[in-house]
Length: 239
Image 1 (cartoon, one colour):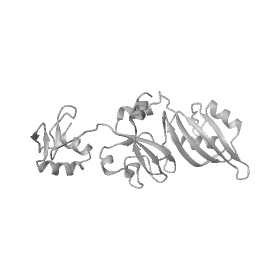
Image 2 (cartoon, one colour):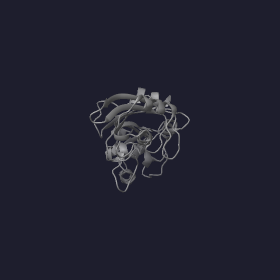
Image 3 (cartoon, one colour):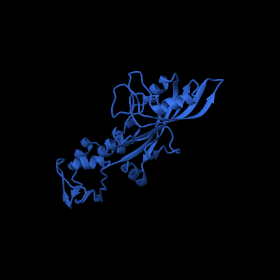
Image 4 (cartoon, helix red, strand yellow):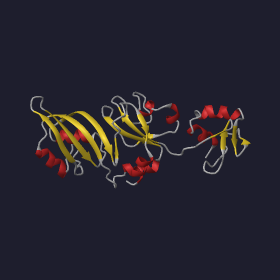
C-alpha cells in the first residue's frame, strides 16, 4: 500500500494534504523519514509514525447509519446530498460505500463499509439476506394480502418476487390506512412500494429496521451513525 493512501485512510487528510505533510519530514517508516507519497508500506509489519506518534491503520470500516429522508444512497450525486455527506471527514476519507440502497424518501438502517467482499456477500442474489421494513400504507391490508405475499408478488413489469412475509400490525378503518412489517429477500428497484401497489396499496412511509442479523440501533437519531461492534461485524461475515 502507498504511504499517502495509508495516511489518508488513517484520517490525516486528503491525498493532497498528506503529500504536503510528507514534505515536512515528520513521517517515518521503520524509523526512516519518508517524503515520497508513492512509497509502499505494509501496515501489518511496518512501523509508521507521524511526529513520533504511531499510526494505527484500520483497513476496513463498518458503519451503521439511520438514514433520513432527503439523501440518497450513493457515493456522489450532482443534485442531492448523499449518505457520505453525513459522515465526519475522517470517516469519509476511508472511502466507504452504502451496502445496497434506500430510496430518497425511505428512512432506516443503512450499512456503509469499504469492505467490498462483505458488500458482495450481503447483496448476492444467491444468499437471500432478509431485509425487514416497517411500512405504512393507504388502504386496508388483509389476510388475502398476506397470502399473496407468501406466494410471491407479480410486479408491474411481470417480475415475480420471492415469497415475502407480511405481518399486519394495525389497520384503521377511519383513515383507511394500515401499518405492517414486511420481510423481503431481494433488492429490486422500489420493491416494497411496487409490491404494495400490486395489491392496491400505496406506501406513505417506509423504514428499514434490519438487514440480515443487524437491527437498527434505536438510540441512533435520524442522520446519525456509529461504528458496528465487533460482534455485529462477525455476524455479518457469517451471512
